[in-house]
Figure 1 (cartoon, rainbow, N blue to C red):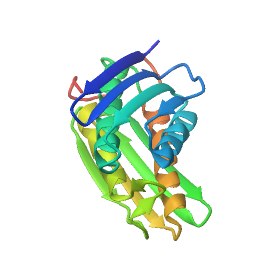
Figure 2 (cartoon, rainbow, N blue to C red):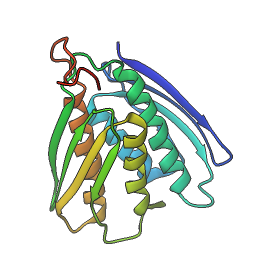
Figure 3 (cartoon, rainbow, N blue to C red):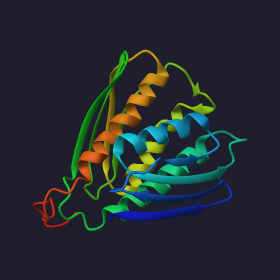
Figure 4 (cartoon, rainbow, N blue to C red):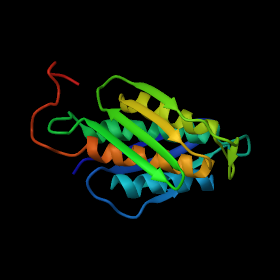
Length: 192
């Protein structure tokens, strides 16, 4: 079983996360930010990952610290759960429609962090979550999982639909990238 736990405690957040890449169970997620919980639950369902997450954050300030720090912890857990990466697909791609919106995600578990985020939102807040924090979440995941994430919105009008398509496309691309497809390291360099 490819599993990992990760934690982070600062003056701004206190986070505990457990992750299973191979055994899905109903997600147990509590960040204090309803919209973010919804997005993380979508991620769990569409990736097939088992996720338990609790976060107590300074949401009285805004959502930024909680969202970014959860991204840090999730990235650390992904990196540890994937292990030496032998046999994984490595690359993942998904294009997800959500009503009028279409978002694409391409990713590479390359060992090199990089994020391209070509998504704009028509509002500044979804529920109590600032939409600009969504980019910070994906940057934090990429940096700490040491992976490339490229997200782009082809078109869309409703910010909720765009955000939902982004998290779902990321989830489905992750499911593909971590899939076991042999025993070899998927790299011509011999390392990832």
